[in-house]
Length: 251
Image (cartoon, rainbow, N blue to C red; front, side):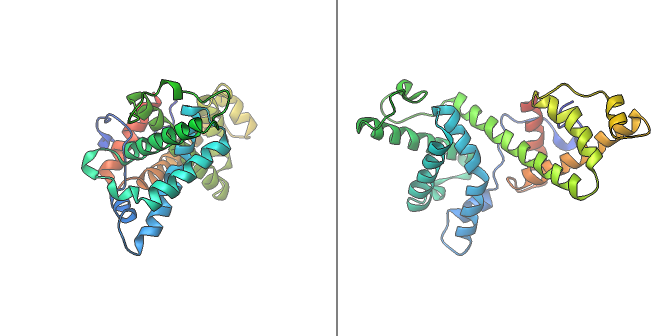
């Protein structure tokens, strides 16, 4: 079943149009002068850099080192030197869209400069030739692509925390059932193992016990996922909305 099937609250309501959480007080701190700016900037960079790097790799065909270099250049030149975060406005859409639009334009500008200096790779990069002259415009497909990258990052973080929790709280069997019944099939690693086989492998009394272990693992996973989403949200209603969005995007 889906990673989010278990114990979904009725308060989640209808899913919104996109996975859109932003902890705007943190963004405001990162864009303002004062003692909190450095810590807030560091937190935002830690949250969004992995997704930005993966987006550049997917969009332009960059290797890992090139994507890292472009993101670092973006952070230094735009975010720090030119105080990009201060221009983000809560009433004008998602912060994540603001951020990916900015790095897309930054990447296009840099690629054009490198091409004009004859430093452009012989094989080129995906998508550059199709970009019109003038101000680069982020498409709806680009925004969706970045949302999907971001969702995978959120899920990967929650799965990692679930693994750590199970390892440190004597829930190794629950993690094993979760991995073989949910995670491995979701990642197309293998088909879901039958409960009877898992019960034998884990020396359980019956397959009912294996099913109960999965319920436990899903409950812990959802708690860890809520914790991750809360880092991007600022109230419980928004967390519920984000979880509903995640469920929709995973279907």
